[in-house]
Image (tube, rainbow, N blue to C red; front, side):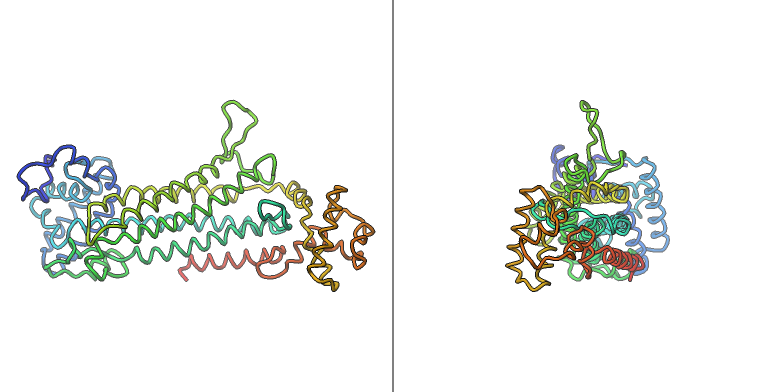
Length: 467
């Protein structure tokens, strides 16, 4: 295979490309990752060209057999990638011509590298989205099962990172699950716009050959061909949309990571992560560092950067294709890899979280987490809410002074703030009574948590079934 120059476009040039420029403009070092999709698209293109009479059946078969052999060479690591041939497309086409002769040069009839690369990226993204969805489903399943298992485990709920009201650990896990459910919807919605075929748009205006784009779209599993040739070769909205999804997902995983890091600390001591998701210190032998959530938290900024890179890449491009678009692949590839790896790490780790129930319970007892329950109790007895708020505030001040939680005060101590308070107040001042009282859809009552987990499980099963 000759690698001296790229013969796909050199006819009108009077001198060879500068060696540095050739390296600077080449993309084969990273877009060879699209080889499988490039061959897939070329096989469908050849089949379509034969169906409309542009290629003979023998030419089609020679091309397809040659491409399959090249796929084998790539998979075995035997393929010789050439920088002078610029990109994955010309490397494969040149090798095909080496193998089957002039017939290999007929493959490019009716298409351009512009619609070819746009098709390859969409095929790649469709494949990767399907892999990512599997990991996202796995994480959601693990989270739902953990929530169901810990529906009765009481912990403090926070606002401003201050103890607010008691909740259950299961309820907290379902809050995470709701974030991921929205992410899941965004991913599936993104896939719909990925699955549109640019092939046949050629360089920018379509082609004079009698191609049948619907045939090619069907062979490649696309929902439809792109409607406009100019937009087809220049659109990268789907890449931006994916990195937007990725940024929101990583933001959610980062929030979860922050809580996991806090909860594993000695100051919180709420959970334990298995050793396989942690590392130690080179100098402090007692350390068990939550490296997986810390690293996921750190990778969030990386994905945000890819989103901004793609938005900036596209913001000033005139129609149609421009060389700028070569810069879409590396941030997109890295965003895909980062999302997939972060989801895999979380899907493996989350079901293995071990709540430290006694520590959580004790933390929920501190900070007067049932103060709102006392206010609600007074309101049910006929006290105006603002007055009830004042009464409870006074009782909390007393508790701070005496170092007693509301549930630890005697009836006489509580009655000094309001004569309305009776013995039945202790039913709402216990942590169990507090969480059980939130007995409505979306509430933290254990039976509601279990019901919510079952609804989430059924919704996820429906997604699996394609409903």
